[in-house]
Image 1 (tube, rainbow, N blue to C red):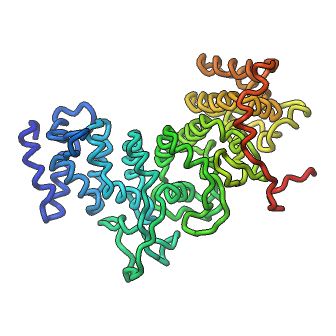
Image 2 (cartoon, rainbow, N blue to C red; image 1 turned 45 degrees about the vertical axis):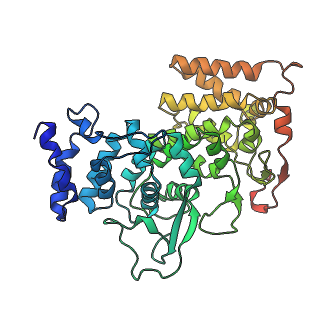
Image 3 (cartoon, one colour; image 1 turned 30 degrees about the vertical axis):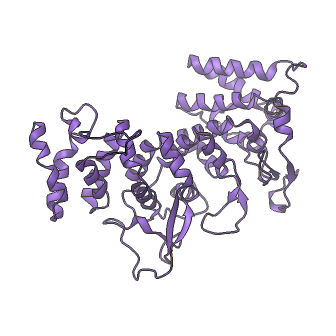
Length: 432
């Protein structure tokens, strides 16, 4: 088939009772979804973005949304089609309606979801729109008890052709839980056990790397940054668990082998660093409990600096007095240590430290924790002009004399952050 009229004749077959017919019809339409395809306009015909009038979707988009819950091959192609088509903003209102968003999130949370990575990619594309980020921040997901699940819960909206419901089906009333803490938990636990010591092996079908892009997109809006910088239960499935800042869960992935995961986590950290009142909580070590004004809820410090510096460090040797300045994770690195290979990610980490320099307290903290020593070595080995320029700006801020005009940069903001030592004996740092 080559012209649009013939392709349009396939659309009614997407609703055929025969699953093979639905699959064949979709397989023939899928090739027209990538950008630049000659008949791509058939998927956008009749769409209305909204505004003062209600959002209007056409038949084919409605069918594609339904087919995401079909049998494996059909659901796979439906998700791929929507991923391809979401570069056009006119499609976003239709795909961000609450029921479909809840399905996507619930499907990603289900450990049996074999297409969870595709669903994560679609959610990543949608979250590039601020309205979707706002919806995800307030969304709750209904859960039912499921003893066979690693989380012991079944996301009700995930039930579909590739995610069967528990047998017997739970008789209890669903429990509503905020979606975003659940997505963070799934993202952390989706990695293999050698990266995440909390689990011996991966218990999910998907790796969920693209959820990191969702987090990066969410932190581009103030409410998103506030979420990641507000203490919450460390276990979203357990009420009354110890408090921690959600951002702290992501830090371990700044050196992950997957460039999407580590790059988007780097962007999430940088976005959170725009929130100046949180600088003390971001930099404080875990054995110190800190608040982020105006909140009065304290949680262990996020200790972000080692995770920002380590990707920028190479195999260089430092003098003993310089080693003592460095965070423990950067001391005595092996000769095989390599810097982050992606220049965009290296630049992101340097930009994060520039943001910490917007307060006098932040500059002083970087000065006394070996940042200059690592950045100096980076500068000697860097070849990308833009990164060199940013490194030189950072060095100028760290090495300059502080005058009366800069002595109290951000003083009121940092002073408002209350600090208390942790009572946890295991988290205390002892000199050996």
